[in-house]
Image (cartoon, rainbow, N blue to C red; front, side, top):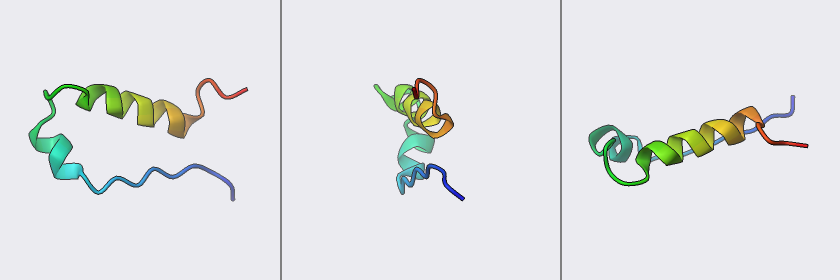
Length: 40
């Protein structure tokens, strides 16, 4: 099958520093990319 894969080995970076600048935005961007939102 064809699909997208996002591999990030920084789980503890996000888990410990969730409130750091850009962490939430990173998750939103990765999620949108994985779902293909905005794909034409």
